Length: 256
DNA sequence: ATGGTAGAAACTCTA
Image 1 (cartoon, protein in one colour):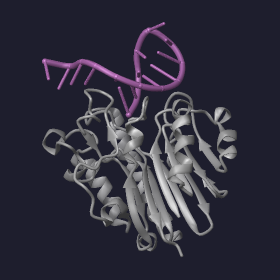
Image 2 (tube, chains in turn cyan, brown; image 1 turned 180 degrees about the vertical axis):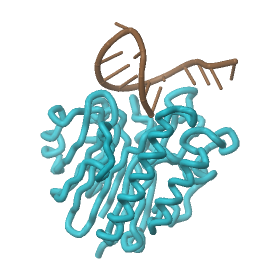
Image 3 (cartoon, rainbow, N blue to C red; image 1 turned 90 degrees about the vertical axis):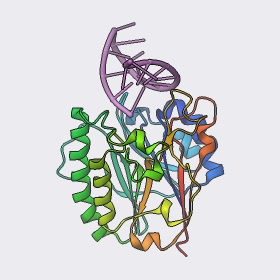
């Protein structure tokens, strides 16, 4: 069983990459972010033709999440309960006894921005919700673009990034509060090469110079973490022509 | 010194 996450930065533009990637990476479930596609325009037929089901919660221009999967998800949720939000950033579904939550955490723009305050409030609401979800679903995976680099090893130049949005202490503290619920950052179960990132700015040849951050994560409940056999970043997808600024992350689980 | 690139959509905002 493989679970993936990929911020595609426009589903419309990245659809050819995604359709080429699906049979190669062969995820059973992949969470997508920044689809920037309203549900009426979601290319469901393309996924069905490739042998996948799909769920979407999107909007025009900004945000938008989707879950593409081999089997059909049920008990779908599209919001953090009790948290009013016009932005489409949440999609949850159940596959057998596996609960999957797809996240697109707000970027925050800068630590002095109103969007940063929104980000921290959003993360607080998320944490309260996930405390309930992890109690309810022993096999829970929370995948997505967290827009947080949790540790110095997740940043190409931690000194430069100290105090900046995506790596500021309040954001990292919010990430640690998620971990404190019992989640495991699956990428760090395994020894990983240095300079392993999931996002590189389009500007300043950041990818070529590997000036990246690891901000896309697969958090697993303890029961799922115990079944995880590998986690890797599909860096090649960032090297293609007209790429997303994010690479996919894939976790393999041995569910027996 | 606060640049630059990409996407969507509208002549700017977001990341």
